[in-house]
Structures are given as C-alpha cells and as structure tokens.
Length: 183
Length: 446
Image 1 (cartoon, each protein chain N blue to C red):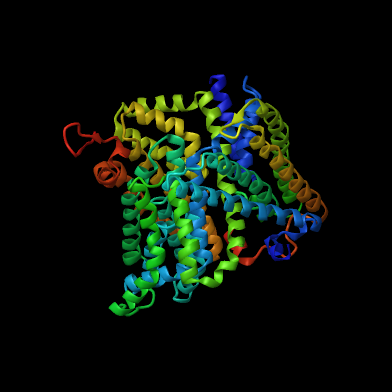
Image 2: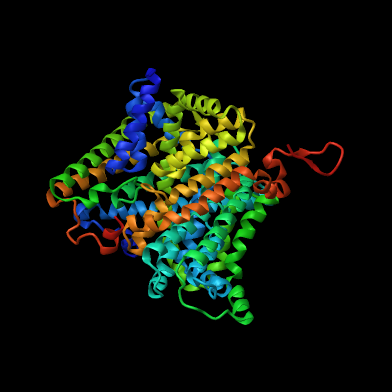
C-alpha cells in the first residue's frame, strides 16, 4: 500500500486524524477500482456486441460499479473537502464567527448523512423485495451503497468537527496567497 | 399564496441559504428536499430513493468518460502539443497568447466535455506566460474562464449529456447543435481579444514547416473528436460507448506513443477521476430529487403557465423569457442541477409552444454556459481567478465586456434555428424530428 500513500490529501491536516488516513487511502483506491471496472466492462460490452456475442450481465455489473463509485467518492470527497460549493464564505472569516459558520455547515451535512443512513437502510431492507435482471440479485445490494456512504460522510464530518473545535478551522499554515486573492 | 407555493419558496430559500452558508451543493439540495418532504404525504425514504434513481441512468455513464478523457490528456501532458499547434496558427496575431487561449479551448472542447479541466490546463500552462508578457492577470482570468465555457458547447459536452439524459432528447443532436454557438463564442472572443485586448509580444508568423511539425505532433490527440463524433454519427456507439472508446484510445495508443513514462501514473489518474466524477453525479442525484419535489408541488406547471401567458404562445418570446430566467438561475446555481431541477418546466414549454427540443436544448445550454462566468456563482471565473491569482471581483470586472460575446451567441442561437440545426439535420436528421421520405431516399424535416 506504500505506493498509494500520496493519495491522502495533505491539505487541512489539522482537521484530520492520522488514524483515518488509511481509510481515505482505501476509499481513493476503491474509487479507482470502480471507474476502472466499469470502464473495462463498458469496453467489453462494445467489443462483445461487435463480435455478436454480447454479455447479458454486463449492464447490471456496470451499473453496480458506477453507483458504488459515486457513493464511495462522496465519502472520500467529504474528507478531502472536494465537494461543489456555491460559496466558501467561512474561509474568509476568523474567530468565533468562523467557528459558528463551519460548525453550522457541518451540522447540516451530519443531519443529511444521518438521513442517508436511516432512510437508506429502509430502502436497503425494501430492496429485498425486488430483483435485478438477469442475475436475480436483490436490488438491496445496490441500495446498500446509500447507508454506507452516509456512515462515511458522518464519520469524516465528525472528525472535522472535533478537530475544528480543538484546533480551530483556519489552516495554521494560512490560506495560500493565490487562494486568498481568489476569495 | 397556496400551500404548495409556500413549500416551493421554502425549499428554494433553504437551498440557497444553506448553499451560500457554505454547505456543499449536494447536501444543501438534499437537506432542503427532506425538510419540505416532512410537510407532504411523501416519505423521506422515497426521496432518498429518488436521489438514487436520478443517477441510475445509462446515459449519465458518459460523464466520467468525458472527464477521464480530459484528465488523462492533461495529466499525461499531451495538451502541450495542442498549445504549440495553437501558437503556430494564431500566435503571430495581435494579442497572440489571448488568441492561443481561444483556439486551444476550441481544440480541447472537442476532446473533453469539462470546462473545469480546460480552466486548469490554461491557468497552469498559458496564464504564467501571459503574465510575463504583461497581460493583466484579471484579463487573463476572464478570457480563460470565458474560453473554457466552450467545452460545454462544442461536443462532447457534459451539459448536453445531462440535458439529453434527463429531458429524453437526442444527445447526438445536442452535441451537433452546440457546434454553432460554440464557434460563435470562439470567434467573438478572438475578435474581442484582437480589438480590445492587450497587444502582447509581437511574434513572427510560424513557417509552414513549424506548422506542419506542430500539426503532426497533435495529430494523435486531435483524432479523439473524430472518434467520438464519428462513432455517434455513424450509429456505431452511444455517447457512453464513444466516451470509453476515446478513453481506450488514449490509454492504449496516445499515451504509449506520446508519453510512455506516464503509464505508471495511470492508477493514480483513475483514482483521482473516480473521485472527481462522483461529485457532479451526487449533485445530479440530489438535483433530481429536488426537481421531482418541485414537479410534485406543481412548480414547473405554474411557472410554465406564467411564461406561456406572458409570451402569448410565441415560441421566440418563450425562448427569450426562458433565457432570461436561466441567466438569473445560472448566476446562483451550477448548470447541471439547474438543468435537472428545471427540466419539467423546459419540457412543458417546449411541447406547448411546439419548439424543436434540440433547438431549445442548444439555447438553454448556451445560456447556462454563460452562467459559468457570471457572479456570484460563476464556476469557471471562480476557478480561473483562483488559479491565476487575482481577486474574483477584478476578474469579474474584466469579464464584463466579454458578456457581449455571449449575448450575441445566445441571441444568434435563438433567432437562427436554421443555422443552429443545420448540422444535426445534415448528419443526424432523426435527432431533430426528421423522418424518412416514404417515396424516396431523403428526409422530411418539420
């Protein structure tokens, strides 16, 4: 795994526990595995159709990797702070004002993650009633990605809240000059 | 106001409030939907399932492939060859580097569907050189951001994939209809840079030998648009399949020939792109749930009635009003969630006014591409100002005159449907509603 150490983002180190670095690493590897797997499967689908021997199960397998890739990526993006934002007002603030904004935002994310876990689990249970063709696997295997993603998002959000509370949310190294000018 | 109206206002307000507080877009969308769902008979579990269903669309699988194409090309430094080709073509003109930015963006748009990738490449490669030549950084950021929007117009375009997948419109037709507005924006930017931009260093015109060497070096990456569009137009591939064929071409042909030392880095590229595609796609899923709830509350039907009433059923007026609406929407919301959230409204108006679906798609996509450089949420301009190292407000001021180029492109797209739809009619007639003549080889188009 040493070759993959660089996949852990070193920015905002003060908001991260070293103990969770291997998890971020594994999630990044899984992101790569998912996109590689569904790329290979779609390519295989094109080739096997072209030679007149289509794989019937490929659509199902492709969609599985595609969906798991998204939900695993959402977890990893939460730890790396890589999501799409409308505004990053908090980054230009300091002191208690910043603490309030950063905490509030993460509380909202935590609440949504909680909903993903609870309602995602209900969907997972409900998914045993429907089967995916042609393998006849319960669709619950696909729906399981939602609560799993919810757990990852909640874990990384709690990590940031606890570390932010202890060390503050502002990067001790300061915002890089080019980023500061861009804000 | 009806209770439905109040719920729509609450949902919209919550989304914008949370989004501008700094909650990630996907979570702001999900949070506002779940809150409003509590006041309806719909269960929260079904809304979570709706997020899932919003992403469970085969055509959306093209998105990671078009991102991967751009990322692999950038990461393997293959794009440097295309920059050299652009320099031999227009580097000698007044404002040479500014012209290179536009020409390169047109080439790159034909390879990647992502404006963000284009901004990243240009900001790191050409922007420092522009600063050394005395170009104002704010001008550089504004021009790079504006040129990058062409990635959403010239095929393959991720916006077109999302529009086609959610609105059930031919993605191939949308790709082709995006060419004209894309070229209008490109030509407009070149004219603007020539007459109103900085002069830059005076360079000698490249010799034919230099040009042919640069063209030869770029031939392999420039095959990608031909592979993508050729496969789609001949009916061999769907856009998703064309995307993976382009990825395979880069991995098995382009990188081994052009930069073989990059091969060991491929696993890392795959991991990064695996992360990258999840971000817009979870936003698509969340926006799909938001759009579903909006439709359930009859929001699109009400707005559609207002617009149809104000326009008196005139298709051109309807498109103008929709453009106005999307200019405002594009100022506040990212293009992809905007397309999905407002798709029921677009479909309603397109059907009622008997507007060609592909033409409407081209108008909406051009308008939303403009939204990528307008404040407060102009994603391309935000990225370009950050990478180039200039205040967003300064980059925004520098981009104001460039808005004229986009107004012209949008107006052209609305008022000249024959020109915009000419390519789809020639190459993919069924995509724009043409059907085979019963007594001859030709096509009959509405």
